[in-house]
Structure formats: structure tokens, C-alpha cells
Length: 254
Image 1 (cartoon, rainbow, N blue to C red):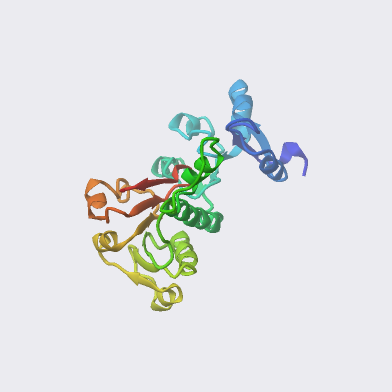
Image 2 (image 1 turned 90 degrees about the vertical axis):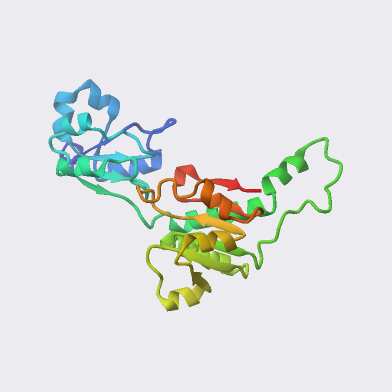
């Protein structure tokens, strides 16, 4: 199929700080005619009718009413990540446009990062690296090595695809696994990873040495963990949030 016959896809740019990765752009070119935002803005009259899809990469380009009104043939917005909280789904739906995402594509890597953050926090890896490379370091204190992960209690808030994969990994450390979820997992799934269901999130918070939040960002889960919840946790506990790929962080209540 010739390039001019391919459906147009609007992207912010190719490469650079915020543009689509070049290898990803090469894949898109096999199926679409790539139109950058700059090209679109310079020639809206011609380009607006050619664009049938928008590829959102790292939350860009911004999908607002003005853009939707300028794309009469738009059929689908493809989001390159899992979360769609940066998209006004109701507004987009009113224009008859569908939204797609990739809910399982990064489940394993995200679970890996969650466990890595837990280990890094417990064993003070970042701090240790800084001490190790410092020219002022003469020795490490013998009581410096942090806390045990093995046989500690991990509380997982949100036992979906990623949360369950975290539990699979945590089992290798002989951790006691608690979880809180809207819906309880099947008994055989719980037994496979040794997980125990907490109907009340408060019970999980009070018992856990590590709390990992793995939920979709929705109006119900926004500000899920606040002062009250932190107050229920052990003074030595660590809170790890991997709910959104671009906002992964550790907050320690120590």
C-alpha cells in the first residue's frame, strides 16, 4: 500500500525529548502515515481530514476538545501506556472516538520494578552506592545493612495482573503476603502465591512491613493513602507506589 493510501496518525514528534521513539515510529510507519503535530498545525486544512488516529506517547499530544473538533475523521486514540487518567474518556466518547491502551504489556516489568524498589529501600542500596563511591568513605558500619525482606510481611493493595505478579516474586523471599482488592481472588490463586485476603485495608496496613500500592488511578483511588493510613502503618514500614508508570516512588514512614 502506498504511503498516501495509509491512514494518517497524529503524533507529537519523532525522537527528541518528548517524541515517539524512533524504532516505534518505524513500526508505526508500516501501517500509518505519520503526521507530526508541527505538520498538522502548519497545514490544518489538508491534514485534518487525513488523520484517523492519534498515538499518545508519554501523555502527548494533549487530547482536548479543540483538537477533537479539528479532526472530523478521527476514529481511535491509541494510548501507549496502561493508565488513561490523562484522557477525558467521556468527552472523547462523545465524539464517537474509541480509546485503546496496553493493560498487560508492562505487567512483568512493573512488578520487577516494584520488587526492586522494595529491596532497594530495605537494604539502603542507593545510600550504600553513594557511600561506596565517596572518596571520604573509609569503612561501612556493621549495623548499616538495613532490614530483612525475607520472611517480612508484604501488603499488596490492588491484586490485579501486576499485583499478582508482585506476589509471585515476593513468594521467592518467603514473605507473608496480605492483599486488599475490590474482588477477592479465587482460592487456588491465593494458595498458589500464599496470599491472605484482607477485606479491610486498615488490617493490611497495620500488619505489613512493606505496603505496595498497585491500583488504577480513578476518582475512588485518588488520595487512597493519606495521613490516616500512614498513621495505621508500623513506624518501620515502607510504602511503595507503582500504580502509575511515570510516578513510581517510595515514601518511608520511618
